[in-house]
Length: 376
Ligand code: ACO
Image 1 (cartoon, rainbow, N blue to C red):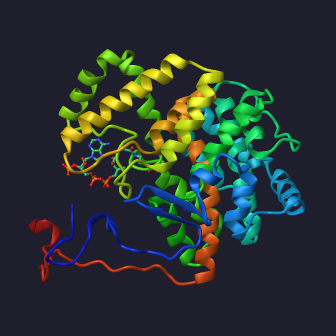
Image 2 (cartoon, protein in one colour):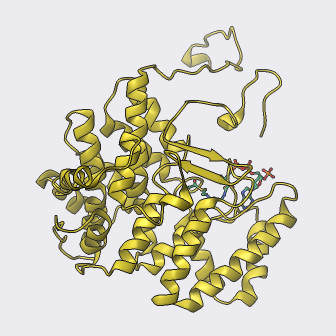
Image 3 (spheres, rainbow, N blue to C red):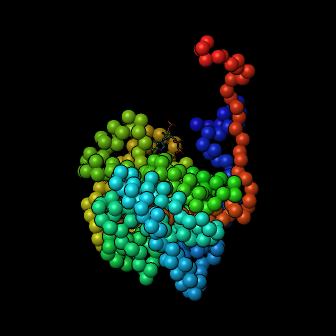
């Protein structure tokens, strides 16, 4: 879908620049992602999630005192209000999908200053996801542990077990890698909402709704399901050909901006490789690599010249599965990472203070004559 020659409309706003940002930049031709000046490969595997959030919010890495204060500010806001817990318990009875429950519960974050809302949103999204996921299993939520870092505490609240350093590092690498990514759909939604001088909570609620769709953050669950359905690499080609033949898209492949391999896929592949070497189902990991190779070969055949490559979601699925997360928590965990970028973009948009209000071109008919109901 390209530009309409009649009106100049570009479907999907492809290549339309909608903001200048200091937060992150995506070079789709070179396969580069820069986050506040750092290549994603430099940052994701080293920073704690708190350091990444601080960096995105302040454009500088915190010194040890600043980091200690920031950790405390966040950990002090992890607990959910009674109203939020009651809401989650109510929707758990109906088995509402986790992303829908997250969207509803994020909306209960109390209004405050922009900074207060941003802190509360980053701090509480993992608590919402962990508490709700346990409720769905008929278990009681685990209270957050203020002594644990953000990522370790998330895993702790999910499992009631303090995770080892390896697991914490792997999750932290994931959260950092997905914390921001230029003008993606959910970030655009957040910026549009804040541009009306609305609040950060509303912006993040809207962003969660946008992230949920399978063309954005909803892909990793289905991507892993395909690996499970295939079961053995010898069946990969027939299975994937059948999907493409039915006109389906292969989840975890292709990207609007990247024309080469998504650099986040490499960062997550390295983290997943480490995780599955020390702990986890190596057979599944090897099967997934086989499926990836087959998918890339078939996509090259299916859409020659389009250069459909592995995107972040394929290795997200493997990494999060290796951490013991069920597929229904993949997209909510993405939200727990991306909320860092959403809130940073909200602040950037707030400072710009310019209403985002594009144009549309009316292409419908004109001068119609009203026909009374009894004559239709
Ligand atoms: N499998 C099969 N065909 C594909 C795929 C895919 N994964 N991706 C693109 N194509 C095809 C399209 O059907 C289209 O064919 P057509 O020209 O015959 O209509 C052609 O390649 C070009 O695709 P576009 O839709 O123009 O690509 P776009 O840049 O709009 O879409 C997107 C990017 C949505 C990510 C797409 O590649 C896709 O649907 N991928 C699968 C879902 C997925 O992995 N989503 C996660 C993205 S990463 C993220 O958001 C964090």
